[in-house]
Length: 108
Image (cartoon, rainbow, N blue to C red; front, top):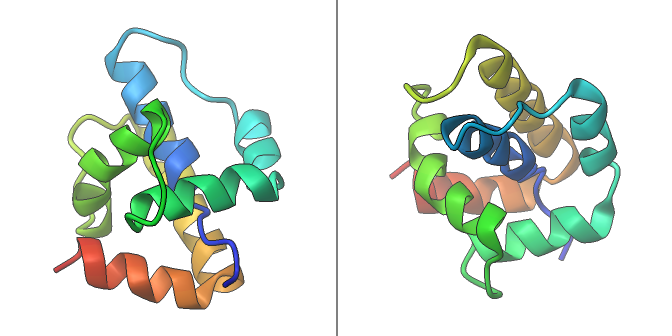
């Protein structure tokens, strides 16, 4: 199974979670690093799909994924929204099978 996620929708969703908790936003450089970390992405995707335990980022992802996939994240800043769109695009291109699973699971 290919590593799915760019749940780095996860990284980006973590960005939203951090912003909500008063932490600084995730930079574009940090997002790029996360997208290039295949182990991190695989771990987060497995969490999101219910195939492995979740860390705090994964837990937040499960909370925000339905909102993001429906195109509405009221907690997200414009920068976070842009990062989320970038991440979703990355996942769609690079992990199409996992993307389809995520959509079925969360967009329903």
